[in-house]
Length: 150
Image (cartoon, rainbow, N blue to C red; front, side):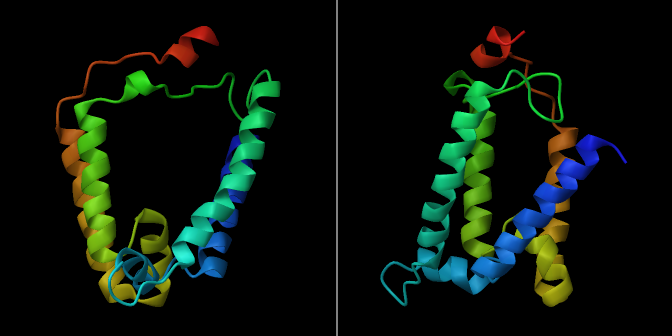
């Protein structure tokens, strides 16, 4: 097994464990967070807030590294990477997330727990991925951070 595969497996297992421990694989938690004027559930806010600490540490560590552990160089986005496709995709993701209470990670985990509702979401997600592949690609652009690291 390659180092890249093992790191991806470790990251996926850590992410899945975080979903399970935090309860974020439960669509009702997400819907409860979005229900501001009903039975509001603040759990997701605490999960997001808790994610800020390791992310802040990761950004500091990344600045000191010359290269990532599993790639030749860092490829980081910039604000110039914001375009209508990205904004439209983010809006579509948010609508789906708010409606279904699922995003890709929890949906795949839920295939083992609640297969019927999760399967509907996963099929729709795969259809969206297929449509994305069939659409013409946006012109390639390099981010400012990517060009500075070359």
